[in-house]
Length: 293
Image 1 (cartoon, rainbow, N blue to C red):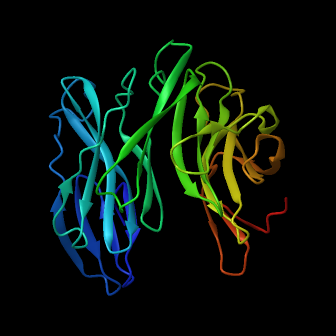
Image 2 (tube, one colour; image 1 turned 45 degrees about the vertical axis):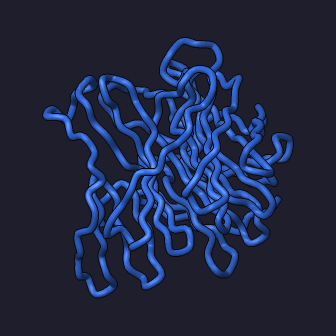
């Protein structure tokens, strides 16, 4: 399966999202769907040519929502597409611009609870600058993505990048990392009860590392997965990552960290099985366990 994002539909088919959409049916039949109309640079490695991406997608009822962004004249703009015919056609939905400094970033993650949808910017406005603090744009919809409001989480440290957002039992949780070039990365967690007002809830007790995946256990509580890269002992060797899992109720003081193995293939995904066990996967290894808080 290819595509930067994949959504499983109600009939078991898969919608693969990249610059265009493709649907793969359970019998293996492939159907080409809509083109997102993103600019494509002549040089794929160019950092200045107009270009675009679509990196996240979810199903909200019978509606497909796709998030991404495009860079025009070296300025990045968040984008969101809606499809009500399983990707056969798409239309862009206007996103409001946050007040204050514009983050100039793509929509990096989507999550839904009924018709309520949260769209998360991929990074804070200071993610790749030396500004001491920045703001993160977060959009919220109550009608399955037709209309949106925007709020900003301010005061985030330099290097704040976001990976995903999930719906818990009674709240929302967004996760990512504070990336420090030349020093270890740290987990970053934001929580909200209404999808509009957000606060940090990571805390120093989480330790070091990047948050890369999350799932919700049977009790509706978060299970976060990530890894910490170890300093290289020799040049020209593969990096070694020590995997980790965090469990809690989303409050900074309540996170408990568990260790996974250290290897060159870190964990990258997590899911909760019907029997309540949580599965964590990397490119080489699988871990199974039951979260305890």
